Length: 93
Image (cartoon, rainbow, N blue to C red):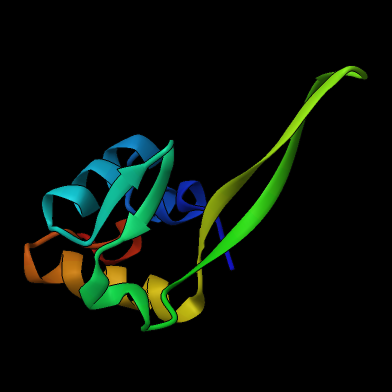
């Protein structure tokens, strides 16, 4: 699985911009700082939720979840964006 930042780079945009576009397309929404897929896409194997440990010092730490896209999910993003005329940099003229 890969981070949304890596996917966004293929399109010449930031992770924030791609997340916003996927939200506008009603593919995902944010819950407690994590992007979650809408129910239509939730069981399709497009994403994995990865626990990430965060520590600021030895007395404070927490675990949060981070969304990562699978190969199937990256292909899904490609197909969705293609329908609205957004192509990866390598396919643009």
